[in-house]
Amino acid sequence: MDRKEIEEKVKTFLIEDLEIDEDKISPDAKLKEDMGIESLDFVDIVVMVEKIFGFKIQPEEMAGVTTLSQFCDYIESKVNKK
Image (cartoon, rainbow, N blue to C red; front, side, top):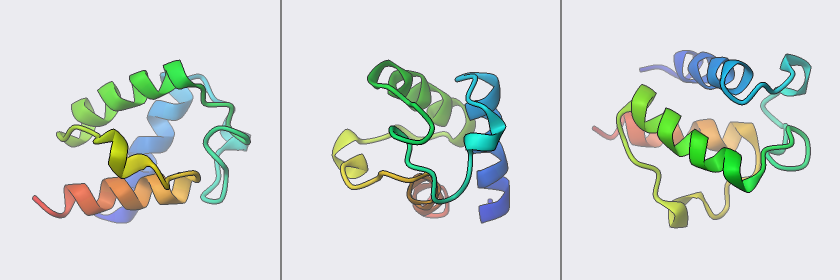
């Protein structure tokens, strides 16, 4: 799966499932501060990533992830590792 496809899938579930305004979504957007993703939203994100991309998010691996671009980097590294 290429980067563009990952970004599109992530953007789609952020808009449709978490109801985040499309204009708040950009590669440099901070997940919490800019997009307003809260702790409970991360539970939904874990479920969606497992459903869409087929792997479980390890919380310790997400420790340094603060922006959407970093989140997509993380997904890309897991998806292309298989």
